[in-house]
Length: 70
Picture 1: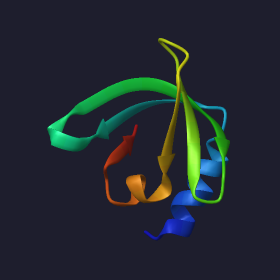
Picture 2: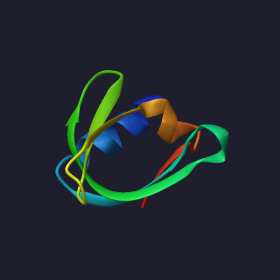
Picture 3: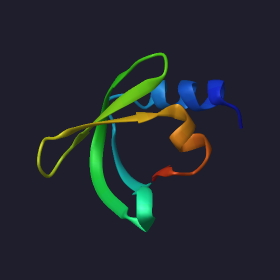
């Protein structure tokens, strides 16, 4: 899979609810449910459902499996 396919899939998934698992620094794993609210050329924005916080991720996070979308 390449970065363009990741961008297309995320752009088509805008407005839908997903479960996310983010493997952060120092082995910190964060799991949350959220909605993909907007996409930009190099990042996309997710609104966390539980506490209404916005988080941004790059498409490369998905490509290298740092962010898993279920």
